[in-house]
Amino acid sequence: MKGFFVTGTDTGVGKTVVSACLAASLRRSDDVCYWKPVQTGIEEDDDTAMVAELADCSKDEIYSEGIRLERPLSPHLSARLAGVSIDIEGILVTAANHPRERLMIVEGAGGVLVPLNDKEMMIDLIRDLNLPAIVVSRSGLGTINHTLMTLEVLRRRGINVAGVVMNGDRNDENRKAVEFYGEIPVIAEIPRFERLAADTLVPWAQKNIEPI
Ligand SMILES: Nc1ncnc2c1ncn2[C@@H]1O[C@H](COP(=O)(O)OP(=O)(O)O)[C@@H](O)[C@H]1O
Ligand SMILES: [Mg+2]
Image (cartoon, rainbow, N blue to C red):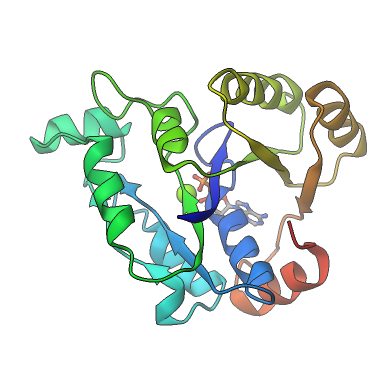
């Protein structure tokens, strides 16, 4: 599988919005496909549907297979309460079943140390999928610490990080600090969209996000 694994410093930090921006931008040069292998809280949060809508995706641009859990909790707990268990082996089988040679934009759940079961965490899935990570972080106060911690943990596992995407009101000092102390490029700064919809997001992404 080729592509990127979109992770982040936290839940709600903008991974889904960033995945939609990446899909809209990267489809200009590649056949892209979005994939959410583990979704919790499916009744309220359907990231696959949100990306399909925000990036105005065709059917081929979405891989809808995956673990879908009802409770809006950490995957390990949401799975336990549903009486099932998540294992990376099974997710890798689902990944291998994807029929097309597309550039995959894979979105995690929560941050890198979110447990999937008693033994495995999201970071183990990133490593086993063997994709470079993109770290989504918020732009405001507190982001330097959270972003640097995430980068450090990813690097300790030998995971290649393609870059950081900062989400929210532009903050040049925070961007510079993340680039300097993290020794990493900030590959995009996503503004707060007043109206989150394909007709605003797609043109913005295509104009402002460079090929990675
Ligand atoms: N750049 C943005 N502009 C406007 N709203 C945003 C933006 N980024 C995130 N949001 C809002 O915050 C919510 C959480 O973002 P989301 O991308 O779903 O985070 P994550 O996938 O990391 O949990 C979104 O549903 C959306 O309402
Ligand atoms: Mg999401």
